[in-house]
Image (cartoon, rainbow, N blue to C red; front, side):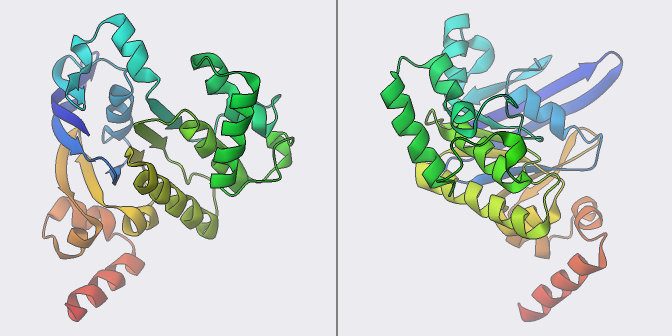
Length: 254
């Protein structure tokens, strides 16, 4: 579990996060959503320790990040997996080398142990014949699966995903959503996803934090989105006719 308590973050005279509090639950897909400029990327980077809030605390299963020593922070980072928006694979490395990179950097595993673990996670993300391929030789969807495999190769407690469906077609995006959800439940990870994709919200939004102008404007589940009267989230989610129709159908059937 990750608990955020009243954090504030400014850049110069611009206050981006204005007292945000939230709990991201273990074993669930927790989504941060909001329009561009709402603060969601700054919140994600604050969770990752890239940005330091001026006020408030962020705790990982009771460990307040700002209270940790340098060694404790480094240890915590080994418990974190990250899926970047553009996959961020090393172009000159094969798929297997990309996935094994965190193990080489942060563990004492030998070559055989690394190979076994790489084989295991690539099989888990349904990539069993791509070990020797370069990122340029595989599709965007396969690259995302490689990025997920690399993120979980070191058995993280916390998984962060920044726009994991960016640039993918709808069918592939759904596959990636479902894969992240399955892995979250299977390994009981605290997963936090920064997304603007409303299909993802409706597909896997077990816990949703909606930011607007640096404030938490709403939180709930994908089911609660259908029945909420919160004006901010209704305007954001149901700006498209498709989701308006989905909501109307849901309310009629309930």
